[in-house]
Amino acid sequence: MRFAQKLRHRWEAFAEATGLRFLPPVGAALAVLAAGLLLPFVPRVDALPPQLAPSLANARITRFVRAYPDLPDVGPSGTIFAPRPAFYWPAHPDAQSYSFRLERADGTEQAAADGITRTFHFVPPPARLKPGAYRFQVHALVNGRKVPWQERDFSVKAAPGDLQRLTSTIGMDLGGADGAYVLLGCYADLQSPHDVVSAFLQWKSARGEAASLGTGPASVWLDALAGN
Image (tube, rainbow, N blue to C red; front, side, top):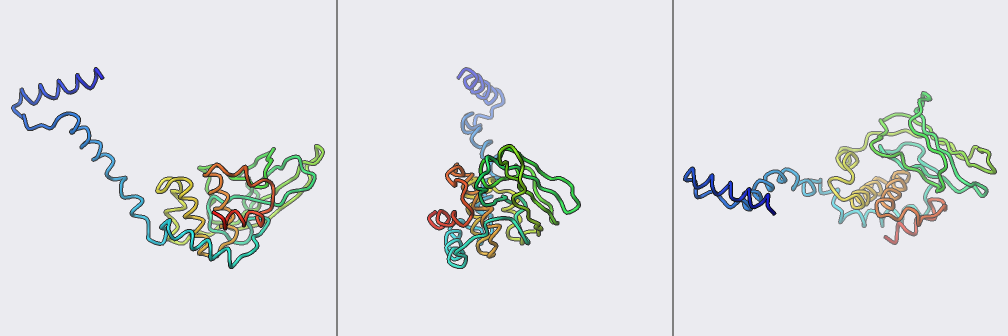
C-alpha cells in the first residue's frame, strides 16, 4: 500500500512540475502499460486455425469411435505423428511393476524408467521425438525378475502443417486439458489410432484422471473416450 501511495505522489508531483496535468492517474497508467505488455498474447487462441477449434473435437472423436470399435492394446507401432507419444501395453498377470526403455533405431537410448505401476508411460517434457525410427521395450518385474513383455518398432513422421503449432505448444495456446482434447480430436480426424490413444492418455493426465484408468488395455479405455 505504501509503495502504491509513493508511486502516486511522485506521479502527481511530476505532472505538476512539468505542467503535464493531463497525465492519467497512476492506476490507469499501469493498466494501460499492462495491456500493452499483454496484448501480443491475447489473440493466440483466436489465431488457432479453424480446424483446431475445440468445438470440432467432440464430433471428430465420435466419428472415430464408430469407425474403430477396438483400439490397439500395445503402442505406438507403425507410423505416428505425435512428437510426444504415450507408450502403453496390456497388463502382465503376475507383474509387480514395469520397466521401460526407448531407443532410436541405431540403439541410442532416448528414455528409461523403472518401477512403473501403470500400463502406460509418458516421456516427460521437454523431450520431443524427432522424425525417424524408434523402438520401445517393456519388461515386467515378476518375483524380482525382469521378464521381457512388450517390444514395438515405430516411426515418427512430421505432423501435417495444421497440427504443427498445436503439437509444439500444447498446454500454452489452450489450457493443458483443452489442448490435449483438441489434439485428440485432430488425430481422430486423421484416423490415427495410436496417436488417438496417446492424446487420450495426455488428456486424462491433464485432467488429473490418469490413475482412474487402472491397468486395463487401451481397448477398455474406449468407453471413457466415448463418454467424455
